[in-house]
Amino acid sequence: MATSRRFTAGDLTLSEMITVYIEGKPVDVNVNDSAAAAALRAGIGYTRTSPVSGEKRAPYCMMGVCFECLMVIDGVASRQACMIKVQPGMRIKRQLGARELS
Amino acid sequence: MSCDFLVIGAGPAGMAAAATAARLGLSTLLVDEQPAPGGQIYRAVESRSETAAGVSQVDWESGVALAKEFRAAGAAYQPGTQVWQMEKEQEKKRKVYVTDGVKASCIEARRVLIAAGAMERPVPIPGWTLPGVMTVGAAQILYKTSHWMPPGGAWIAGSGPLLWLYAAQVLEAGGKITGILDTTPAANYLHALRHGVGALRNLSYVHRGRALQQRVRAAGVPVIKNVTALKAQGTNGNSQLASVRYCVNDQWREKPASMLLLHHGVVPNVQATLSLDAAHRWDDVQRCFAPVVDLWGDTSVEGYAAAGDCAGIVGAEASAVQGRLAALEAARALGSIDEAQRNMRAAPLRQQLTRHLPIRPFLDQLFAPRENLLLPHDDVLVCRCESITARQIRDTVALGCRGPNQMKAFTRCGMGPCQGRMCGLAAAEIIAHARGVSAGDVGVFNVRPPLKPISIGELAALAD
Image (cartoon, rainbow over all chains, first blue to last red; front, side):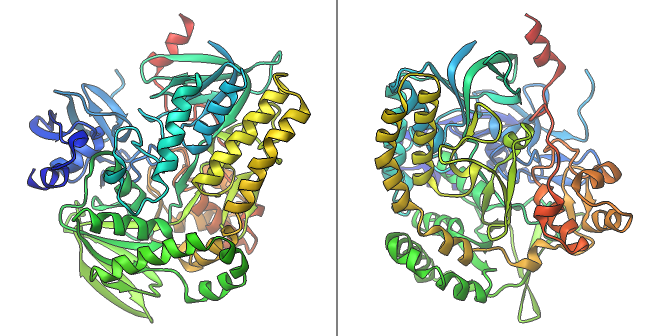
């Protein structure tokens, strides 16, 4: 996490870090991060697999257009992770294939 | 819930429109999918200091002022709200359905302004679906909201002002840009010169653009010009980007890359106006569709207007002015001002537009997308959601499909969760080229509700 701290130092409005759980592991992220940004910060690489081809995918547009950032957030599947701001303790997991009908 | 004037989108056009309308006494509601006002250009404008935005973003103060004006004007505001259906007039009301992600609800409005902004033009290249490839706009959003920068540096490829602005911002903040692969065709500079008079009338834009390019070069970032084609290569198993390949003078070269940021200009976000079945036009220079609007932003659908970049790319400052003009016309239509008052208030705004707009033909020509990039090779994935290649699209033309909607029925292209937002323009270009006609003649995907996927649980809340 050295990278993110380096870039937030000296800017008080951005300096607050919170802990979220990404793929079950606690990660310190910026309080202004979206869930998708947090996943990128954590360096987990891909954030979902395509339900059609199984290919690994990651956030592409970060503005709610491309739907590549679909993740499981606090137990809810297929959320647009770029549109959801992190909350302390938020659980963010990869969306693997299609969501289940439940 | 009901209101006189519903504004969709909290970018410059939406904020300016809502503030203007509220001050004229209209009960005004602004809904926006983001958690805070600003749109993409002024993203996080209330939470970031001006210095944090970087000196490169010189018009940041306009955004700060707009957000303050909007907050002070007394318009109601619902952030974190998605519009998923808009209905045409019934009994002088327009019903617009929204969801906050938990519960759906219905807003009844007498007039509606769509201020949905722009999106980056999706240009499919081989490997653009690999983790490690995203758009320059996406990276800039990450920078603006929480100062994230690519930890190992990034290659930037494409064309357009945003590419240079982002590179300058990252360098200024101490980040690393590995290199720039500039796809702007050399001929564009000549074509743009034909609109040099307009550029002379907006010299500050030209100076700003040149200063950004100089700053990037001065930082020692390699800038490779006249790049004609791009490929992203993955690691074994394609779980991550490994390198970027690019073609200059028919020679391919390869560089290792941990991140590749693509940018090919911005196009209007027309999903909302398309869903209304409003009349649209094809812009052959910007190579995009935009709704047909009159001088006040009114679309062909009664009671629905569009302002800002979603009605044709004009930039942030002109967008705000267009938002105000649309609000004035709404106030006239709803009886809070008369036609003379509307025209009197509009006159100085029209003056402002003539100051902001002369540069546009110059910029449009200079950053017009490279033609061959709009026509991906057969193996390139065009529809990311449904994994449909350019070949599959071309095959449907050979079968007799004349436009995207027939093609969609054969392939599922455009039927995934993004609902054709990412593949729509590319599909239109591919079909048009295969048929030997203009993309304007083949048209775009029909857009149907819901505009964004919505769960049965959210829908059920409507019955409460």
